[in-house]
Amino acid sequence: MKNLNIIFNTVLLAAVIVLFLLYFNLKKESNSIQKQQPVIAVATNANAPANFKTAYINVDTLLNNYKLYKKLQNDLLAKQKSMEATINQKSIQLQKDAALFQQKVQNNSFLSQESAQNQEQQLYKRQQDLLTLKDKLSNDLVAESQKMQKQLLDTVTIFLKNYNKKLGNTFIFNGASFLYSDTQYDITDTVVKMLNARYETASKQTK
Image (cartoon, rainbow, N blue to C red; front, side, top):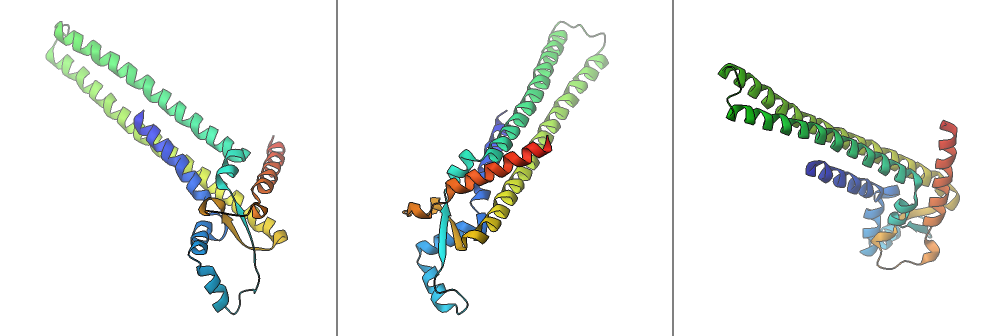
């Protein structure tokens, strides 16, 4: 199931990358900070505030501790395993039937050449159907990952927008993009706790 494993790993990586795009295009803004461009932007923008507040989030830490992400990750892994089990079962059965067919050919067990050709065509069709099923299940996994990405992005982005009304930050950065950052501006733990509390409340309401 090498193809499915590649797809699954790509999916999880995509989910992590999506969160890198949190609130005000975090990575782009943080890269701009590193190039010292925002100072110029603030100085030349008449509408920009003279002073602005910033904060940052360690996305890796958020993912490792966010219960919704863990649930979605586990759901995706369970679906992948189910797909692999289905493909493995059908592949093993097809191999057994193909071996039996080959043995019957060698033993001249078919009553006619037409009978042998019919069974050979059936085996070929099953092989093609199995390839089609692999493609379908792979596409289903990709679709599921896209749904997961959207749910994570919507959840975290909406939360940050609402939470930032109290904080009043001009920027919330991705801490992974900085060579150095003062921990007093790190709001990761607070965000994780509040996200998990909201997730647990929502989970109880849906039960």
